Structure formats: C-alpha cells, structure tokens
Image (cartoon, rainbow, N blue to C red; front, side, top):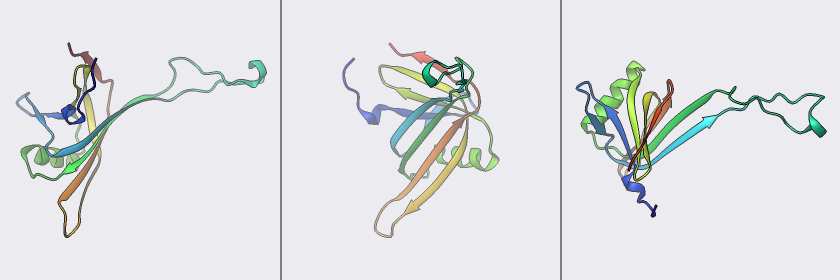
Length: 137
C-alpha cells in the first residue's frame, strides 16, 4: 500500500433517506479504537508481572475532527443530533484500507473563531455499540 493523503479520509453521517453525507469543512480527522484492559495481577503472579484478563475490557471507538465551519447541510444534521443527543450512524473512511461504520453520539461540538480568521469547529463522536469494519479493495 502506498502513502495516502489525509484529506481523503472522510467522516460521513447517514441521512434519514439512507444516503451518507460527508461532514463539511473538516481539515483534520482521527479515529481512535480503545480496549481497556482488566488487570488480574495477584500475589501468585510470576515475579509480580502484570497479568491481563483476555477479552474482558470495555471496547470503544472515538471519531474526532476539526475544520472550517461551512453552514452546510451536514452541519445542520450534526447540530440537531447533538442537541437531541441521538444515536446516528456514522462512517469513518480510510482510503485503500477500510470503513468503520456504526452508531455514535456526538459528545463534543465546539465552535471558535478569531476576529481576523475563519470560524472553526470541532466534533467528537463516541461509539454507542460495536462498529463494523469493511475492507476496501
């Protein structure tokens, strides 16, 4: 696999008609997959080395992004999802690698801007179930 352009990574939100729309204006995007470990170390652990319980921790996914506020259709959908705290289907697309898709809730939505600069926003999505991974060919 060759190097990929970061701008080709996309965050998409599923509309009520079933089609996905790209979240507008994002300059940076990231996907974080987490698996908390469960420590079962005890006095019988060999030389006090930590022991972990396989498959016992809580798993989660987090999508975040920041960019230029565009006041696009996707902004209105995200704003509504935030204020309703609804679970919506999102996709995180990594070119030539795959798509992570699942239910997420917007946990952070912030706006900022300087008097001599553009209006910016940041968004953080927290998983609300097991996301699906689809390989891209």
